[in-house]
Structures are given as C-alpha cells and as structure tokens.
Length: 136
Image (cartoon, rainbow, N blue to C red):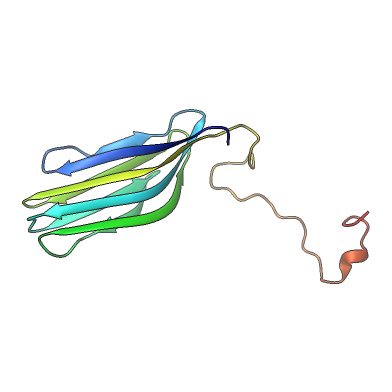
C-alpha cells in the first residue's frame, strides 16, 4: 500500500436525492469503515448499504428521530460499486458512507480473484519438525 486516502464514498438525503453510488476506480480498492445516519420527524425510514451487489447493512430505525454509526470493515475491488439508499415516508433521513481508498499494487497480495483465498500449505502433524522441507 503506497497511498491511502480517507474518503466519503457517498451521501444520500431523503426525500430529495437519488440513490448514491461510488464505483472503485482502476488501481484502487475501497475499504468501507463507517456508515452514519440520522433522521428527523420521520414516520417510517430505512437505510440500505450494498457493496458489489450484496446487501451488507440494512436498518429500520425506530421512532421519529434517530441516529446511528456503524463501524465495519468491508472491501470493494476495482469496478465494484458501493451503493447507499435511504427511504422516508415523511421528514428527513441523511446517510453517508466513508472509509479508505487504497492503492492496489499488482503483486502486493494473492494474485487470485478478489475474495478468493490463497491456498494453504499442506497440513503437518505436530512433531514433524525434523522434516527437512520445513527446516533445512
């Protein structure tokens, strides 16, 4: 990781603004760290966060006035979308998603598909320490 930038990926205000979305640019990966939301004088509200097409957070806050801060570690890779939406029957709902936009250097991590786990070395029984392939 050469460069890391703190970033507000998207904000939404309901009623009024459309769904907010951020597409991760080439050479970067986004680490979503925080979702904050608040509402005032709403009769019914909902907040939804989607990353790469998967819902990672949904809230149906109780009451007419509310607020929340959700701490998370979610990763979006190149060309994946971080999308935020909120609904309100009446009143106002605000929401924002922030985190870090990191330089994604080739070869810095496992070169497989995003989200794919790196294969593990063969498992050894405890006591196999004399094996020369482990300790030459």
